Length: 150
Image 1 (cartoon, rainbow, N blue to C red):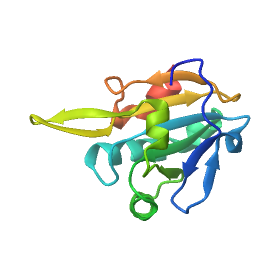
Image 2: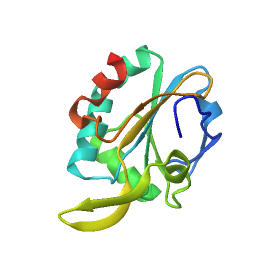
Image 3: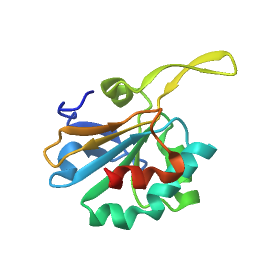
Image 4: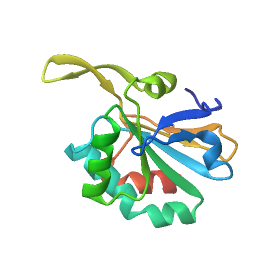
């Protein structure tokens, strides 16, 4: 997925098993953020930063939607533990990760494995990708400021 591309209509299922569609956010800017795993320190910092600034994001016309490969049950626990005001997509079959190009080989401590690259897509009111905050650019503890500041 690149700047100028139209995002897919069907985004996946949220923590409640409800199908989420791009058209659900028509007229709003969508922050679609991909993160590696529920309950990890970086992902928790990022989610909580978006939570703490959610009112400001909404005031600026944004809606937030997180995506990771964990299932609905994991997302429900993550939302409840951190009091998150937005939905999380359970992309267990990697459909959305593959569509957006956020899944690939990673390396940690010399060990190679496949996982999600922490990436945020800002999708405009018409469903077009307007901005991409790449894995090297994402600052988990200042993520809302990154979204609002540009």
